[in-house]
Length: 194
Image 1 (cartoon, rainbow, N blue to C red):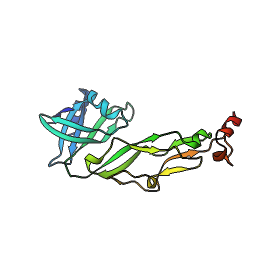
Image 2 (cartoon, helix red, strand yellow):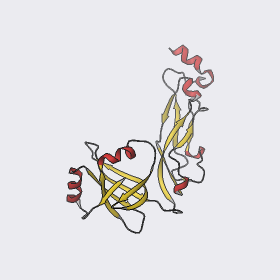
Image 3 (cartoon, rainbow, N blue to C red):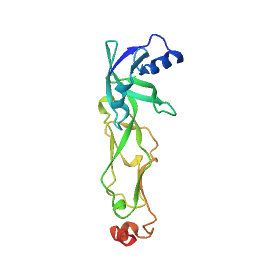
Image 4 (cartoon, one colour):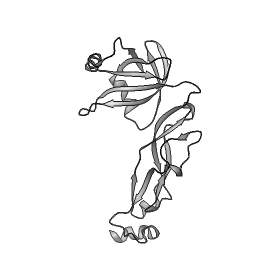
């Protein structure tokens, strides 16, 4: 992603850049904060994806390895107003929010329950080389009324920063499935309710 340094920093300057299709950004985490702009169109790959990507920034010929840390959107139009990047350096620990990717079909859903995602991202702390694009959560064995919490998962070489009690996914009972014995009778209950 290519960018240009901003000559001046302020609201007027930022508005002027946005009118010309550029997004004001800040790169921090290095020796100095660098204020720069990038074309709005180059943000699509970074923003419209659940994955977390390490980005190579070229700011006026200087190259930086960074990760997108925060994005501010216009409250009405949803256009990007501002973005913060954090420079990644070898051996320097970082904290990022990784998306959760659900794997499998739970037994509870097959029995007529409904899978609810309670959390879409988990904050992790570790070295950039150890950070995956997402965290996989296998829900195959989850029955109606059961949940997977942060305390139930581990990510190699990373520290999970959110509360261990936080629920990631749960299988809720639906009106079509009676509460008693729903998990045991499984698909038989589902068939009867139809």
